Length: 538
Ligand SMILES: Cc1cc2nc3c(=O)[nH]c(=O)nc-3n(C[C@H](O)[C@H](O)[C@H](O)COP(=O)(O)OP(=O)(O)OC[C@H]3O[C@@H](n4cnc5c(N)ncnc54)[C@H](O)[C@@H]3O)c2cc1C
Image 1 (cartoon, protein in one colour):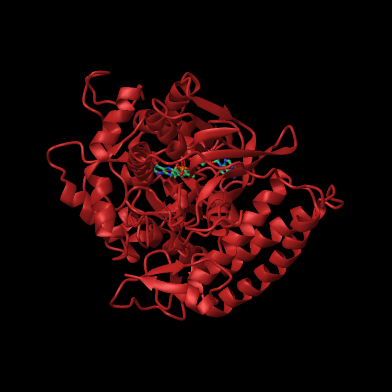
Image 2 (cartoon, rainbow, N blue to C red):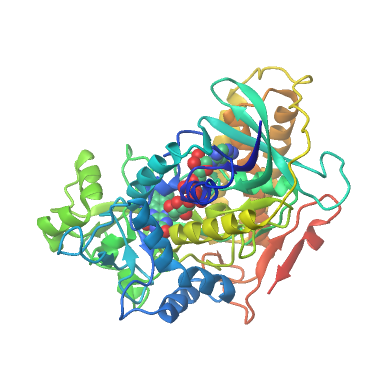
């Protein structure tokens, strides 16, 4: 199978890239579950963009820098923010039914406000923005004759010129992809390959992310020779519904934006004691405050109260949250919502330039898998869907402008030396141990001792998983576990390399922020010692 472009992942990054490319290029869009599965469909709040006169590009840029704690790259921030309006207009042109003002369907787009934003600038479709966007794009993707969709196919590894023993710069020529239902590995060759595989929230025990967020792209890119940066910056969403039967249901930032108050079980507010912005402080501050209060009082959760806004307001603005909580017997028009923090967003990833190019030839990384320099040490709410849109368009433009030769013939996947796994329990056990280790030792508040403990345990798990991978046929779970454990290693190495507290990385051993902000960049390659690999980029 050969295509112009192979895209791994059908979130907003993957689908919008496919649509930008498909009028001229033949595209394979590979996704490990169904097209709609991924974090993009779960996004509730919306897309940040400067859309009206009292707001300004400079204000959005400033808000992004403030959230990013001095680590955002100004060129990337400006690049994204300046393209906000055009990106939203592109989605409107695709037919996304965004919420509009009171004058009905033809009125101005309704803008909501979220923590860390100095203006109302969040374009949304009620409280289910991602779902509205993704459903619209799925319609376009499915009807495009140049896009071939491969659902239930998971990328295993990229095929590089280096692995093929070819001289010259290291390039990607495609990927090995497991047909999950057919249970065999296909070889897909392409002139360009795009990793749009999303984040890595599943590396933690508690996460708001869907099951698909297992760090596959970071791991595949790293194994192919791409650098990663800033993996220590994991955003913990402060408010995930706390209920034994609710799997990762997020209570959107917009609930606090529209007046929701955080309270202890006795009804007392606590955020004003932590930050002058109270409930509207950036996520990391709110998550740390909740973590602090939970540990201080020995409680399971805190409460988010929006009931004072009244039934009509709540049902109009938060229909999904209202309905979902009601399923668990919580009527949010009358009572507060029990919430806890959970791993939400991976700020770091494969380093890219403003065209979405990684440091490996013909390989692009788009969306949450990438580290573009936009988010710095902490992502500003609703900047990530915007990042997906802006970089997908930029990468597509770049690919369309390059006259790259067709890929060489690629060797088939070799299964001659492996057998069927004898004990699947090894996978389940290691998966659980890894996620608990990360939660307990690499969570919201870190210490060097705990990080070292995590590093040690991860090394043991890696050895075991590597042995399993070398001897047995690949399966979806094994591929994900292998990627998760590598992603965990990269997070821990990055956290250990940062000798300060900044943004989302808070270390008790290094509580101060250094005067100069530097990225943590890890370079792959056996030739590099880990000390030499952990270099800094200003
Ligand atoms: C609950 C929730 C709410 C959010 N709300 C907002 C919001 O309001 N605004 C905002 O800006 N951001 C929000 N975010 C963040 C935002 O949704 C994500 O950052 C963004 O959707 C990432 O898009 P993506 O295309 O990079 O990845 P995803 O949408 O996660 O898509 C990744 C795709 O890759 C596929 N995939 C993964 N690995 C492989 C593999 N090995 N082979 C093949 N396919 C693979 C997955 O199946 C999936 O299709 C939210 C996130 C969550 C979890």
